[in-house]
Image 1 (cartoon, rainbow, N blue to C red):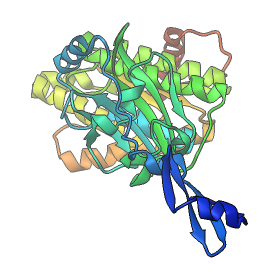
Image 2 (cartoon, rainbow, N blue to C red):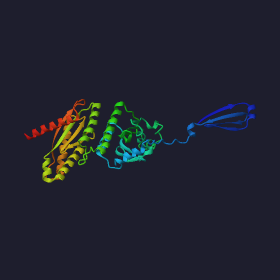
Image 3 (tube, helix red, strand yellow):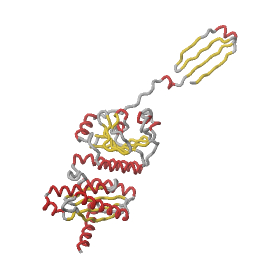
Image 4 (cartoon, rainbow, N blue to C red):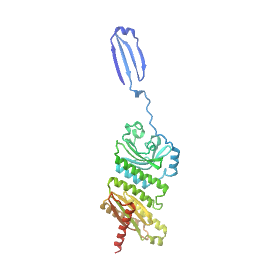
Length: 375
């Protein structure tokens, strides 16, 4: 509130004016007789005092909302349990960007639901207060460097209360052109900016999530082992390779082949062979890092693509893998052992090899290992 006082010393004016008050926009002024003086008071208030408290700006509905919701629900992904293929990317995003929270969020009719979450306990929040509800209304990245300074979000409960959002960056997740189902998003309680390289990295990680969503339709998941099949592995590995090229990180491919797998099927039945494949895939998921891509190429062949891993790191990972396999064989107590051979091929970030060629080199290395073992 701003107060101005002006004292007019004039007995003649005093006799001519009785106390009076006039309303004005945003305040009032008054004058009255005080002894032999007229006192003029102008009272002016800040405009915000007269405004009703601004209502939070809710996200608008896309023009094709009915089509979008139908596409989302046809996937039957809402309210399903977490999956490693999504969690692996959100863990990677949280670590790479150094943020407190990373999410895969799907925007339902009146809520946003989190298929994968790192750094947040809630499984959903109302759509009306969601940042992702705004993000799906555009095709590019939706970035808020400091929410407290943004007219759309400064009074949002997610900003004024936990998790106290300041920085938000969301990459819309497209099922097809014009159908944005949700986002891969980054959240932090401190203001933050992304440079062009960071933005492209977020887009690449978002593309990995999009591929996993499409895999639900395209069946790129191996139904038996619940890891990527050949097509799914090559697609995810292609995105990982692009990240390696941009970040100038090395790549390595490890190919695994189960030894004496046919006798397990022949002697104990195909259900035991399926059991062996599932258990081998479980060990792969537990041993390899969140930034690695794993898959089943077919039959008894498995593959892993590692990024930014030195020969020493690969040796440590393979040693841990062997120990986990030994422990698993002891725990299942079967009349057979799940045994394997492996081959490693490493490449610089600027290699001209295709992914298929990289896998072929790892296969050749595995063949050499088998020959050495047979001698």
